Length: 284
Length: 163
Image (tube, rainbow over the protein chains, first blue to last red):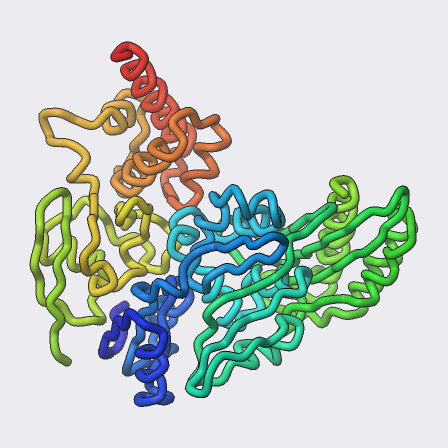
């Protein structure tokens, strides 16, 4: 499994990387951790003439927490998300989700930017970013723009990022209250059969706010406003969890693949969503 | 396609090489540097037989181009010890029957080495989670986990004795 030949570029500034993308157009791709792209190159399912490695661009690194605002550079790895103590207290759902991605070796290399920008419905971070209401910074030839995670995903591998843009950072607010990332997978290293990200804040005995999102249950990550509405104001009892789960299931569109037929996926999704809501509430 | 000059520090030795960008690190280690400890198993980033340590990270060297490692410090299983003076992990794998066919062993030991650097007192669950990226097709996990726990205990006992 030897990829087709390509030219390797390793710029140290984002401007130089953008220039390379402009110059080489369709023939160029950026490389982050490489654990999605390199396997595709080995299978020769991705033909790339110019590979632009982002590893030397310092601006793409680092986790910055400024009060309640969090900025994570695109090249931050899953392992860094897991070991960052500040992030674990400001938004603990990141660590919980990252620990369920792939395996230790892949987490040392795999980046949050690659995970969100790739557009693979199986990636976990896009669903999580829906729940967080995150924003993505995209640098392009005419400057930087910001796109909401909830507006970013158009279809499998199709996103709002233009070919000449690079996703540089993700930004979101620190979370308060309860959280849960639940994922059912066949084995370590597999993508989710179904996964759900839930954030809940409490006001006395009832749900003040809720956010419910799902991974690998449609060709994009799904954020369910209806599921959040079904929880808000309730005491998050069994009836409310059932109503929210039904609302979330109405928003998904899973397809049959080697993880099972549609009925099975809907069944697993229902269990995973209910568990995630119950666990988030228990921590709220 | 033109070749690129890279410099790697492998097991403490500086290596200057000319490689094609598409050459995967595992092949450069095995075929150019004759380090055949890291094995080619699945070649699809799953099995971990090709695991080496790069700048303090356990990495599957079948999923990294050698050019990406330019300037990096790399440790393969050969770098952990000499044949006359085995690393404690290697001794414990021998003592506790942590290897059967031996194919996954270099990757297991290299991964376990990094795991114990980061978590010197792992529970059995920590070890199982920590080596989840390494497959043993003989399914010898029980004794692999036992070997790693025994190595951790021995390292810690030696450290306590030294203090």
